[in-house]
Image: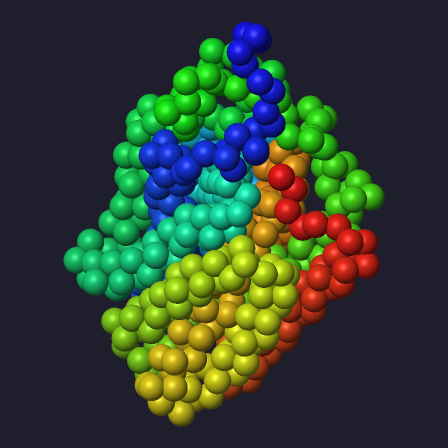
Length: 448
């Protein structure tokens, strides 16, 4: 270290400098990755009616297909999160994108439901590794005071990608078939790989914590703060260690918070994936055509985008758990209204309700990802975010499988949506308990 250099921890360095073009580029690249993930998620729900028609399937026959993708997402998150804390965010992120791009291409050539189910599982593995690492990388390049809003803004790529995926699928499906939709889902991520390799840096916090070569660290520092005449010598943020592993999530400081976060993810993603997977089928069963169903489901994603941005801003201004708990309650109320709107075929109520569900459930889920990325320190952040998403994916599996089961019971739309509101209230309760935990222990949520 030069005599003119001073020691500074990484987060303080990021906080004390304006958001650079380099940091904005990182967030845009991560935005594109989660947007492609969103496209893939929505597209599979919209090709379901085409698969039913071509292969003479029942609605319940599609449950393993949805479940396989979600099991893959869960396994990918469990595997690639800890690897990212050991090997770095960038190589795991790029490898995950390549994996789900190639698997989606192969899915387009599946000759039967069994083959398609296997390829959807492999696609899910890649998606499960990509999304948490995009969240982690964005969080680690964000100033503390803007972390929630920046992470939620980046993650809006998922809801925008889902909305575009639904609209594109409904419009293109008659022309290119379900094979063409899956090919688009494979080509798009593979096109991003050269840009990720060239433009995406490794996490600065990770490199400093792992004592990587100083010239590599300084190259990133100069990109973030080119105006500095003297480059500081960066040191790890306090309370961070090189030890990684699942045990860190259950240390005395984080154990209760980990359990409550996992509960929130499980309940939230149960709702989101049941809606994403089954809403087009539910609406078409009620007499709506596929185009109208695509637009209505897209309103859910638009509500999620608007909600995520607003929630992220409020999370940076006040208690984040309080904000999220309140919005999940609203989401549960709107779910009940949605069921009533479908049953009555009241388009105005239906549009307002599905927008409200998007704000309250999808928007809050984005906020919970931002919350989680700030809850854990660098040495276990990727693991913490990934494993929370993995537990959430188990909720996704339950939601997707339950959707087919509930429809087979011939329950009304109002009854199905009313039952779906219960997990939203559980998520609100878990976040309320997190708030109480903070008040009791006088601990801060955000690790800086």
